Length: 437
Image 1: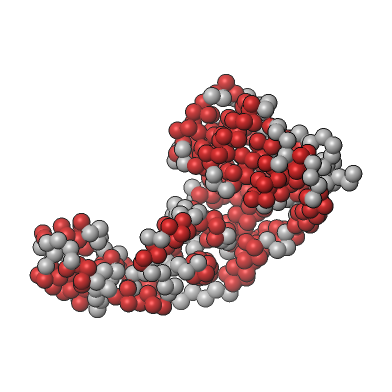
Image 2: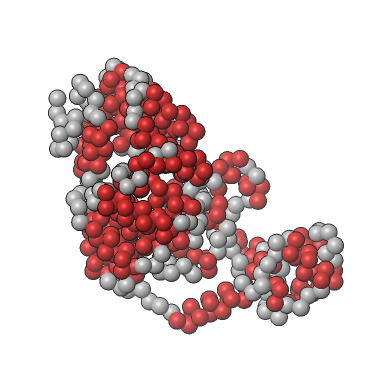
C-alpha cells in the first residue's frame, strides 16, 4: 500500500502507527497545502471501507484535516483502544466539549495509554476549559518528572501563563528547552510571551529560532512578520509572509497580511484628523465625577453604571427618568453638562442606524447568546488583529462587541485596516462594535 506521506508513516497499514508516528505524520501533513490535499485524497480513498480498523484510521486522518465532526463519527466506529480514546478526546477538546474529552482521556488510560501523557493532556484540557485548579492538580501529579521531562515544564509554563505568572512561565519554557532543544511548542510560546511583554528584540531572536527549522512554523512566521512591520521593515515582513505563501498559497491570514503590508507601505497619516479624533475620544471618556453634580444625581448615575460622558450618549431621557429617585432636576443637570459640549442624551443610539442593526431582544435569544459566547478565534482574523485582541484580553465575540473603535485603535500598532477587518466580519454576523458617538 502507498505510504501516506514521504515521512514513511502509513496511516492505513495493517497495524496502526504509534502515537509518536501519528504526531510525525500530522506534522508532515500540515507542512504544506499540497501535503494536506494529497493526504485528504488518501483519506477519502479509504473512507468507504467498513472495517473497524479502517474506520479508526480514517477518523484519525479526518481529525488531522480539522474535520472534527466527521472524525468523531468515524472514530466511534473504530475498535476500542488507546488511540481511539485519545483522538476522540482531541476532537472533543477542539469542539470545546471538555467534560467529554476528560472522560475519553480516562478511558485511554484504561486501554494502556501512558499515565504521564494522559495527565498532561488532561491538564491541557482543564486549562482550556478555564479550570486552572484541576489543571494544576494533574500537573502536580507528575511533579516527579521535574527537571526530567520537557513536556512537564511546558505544560507547567502554559498553566502559569494562564494564571498571569509570566516570569515563572518563562523560566519553565527555558527549562523545557534545556531538556529538549527541539521542543518547538515551548520555543514558540516563549517567543510569544516575550512578544506580548514588549521585549521585541528578544521575541524576534526567539521567533527566528522557531522558523529556522523545516518545515517552517506558520504562526511564528506571521508573528515575526508583525514585529518586522511594526518596525517599518516591510521587506523582512513580506519575506516572512511569502515563505508562508510558498507552502500555503491560500492561507487566509497570510493572504490578508500580505495586503496589509502593501497598504502599510503607502499609508497616509492625517495628523490633523488624528488630533481631532483624539480630542473627541478624550471628551467621550471624561469621567462624570469631573463635573459638579448633586449627590442624588451622582448616586443614581453610579448605580446605573454610567461612568463617562460617552455612557450618557447611550441612554435616553426616558430611561434616566424611569430610574428610582432620578427626577427632572437631575435630568436638567445632566443635559446642561452635555449642552456645553454640543452633545445630547441618546446621541449614540441615534447614530447606530449606520451600523449593523442588532435588536435588543436578540441578546435574550439563546441562539444569539451562544454567538456572543463564541471565541474571537472563530472570526479567523489576521495576525495583527488577533494579537491586538489578545493584548486587550478580549476572548469572546460578546466582549469584542462591547469595545469601541477608540479602544481598539488605542492598542499599539493597530490601524484602520485591522479595524475595518473586524467591523466587516462582525457585520457579516449582524453585529457591530460599541458606539459612543
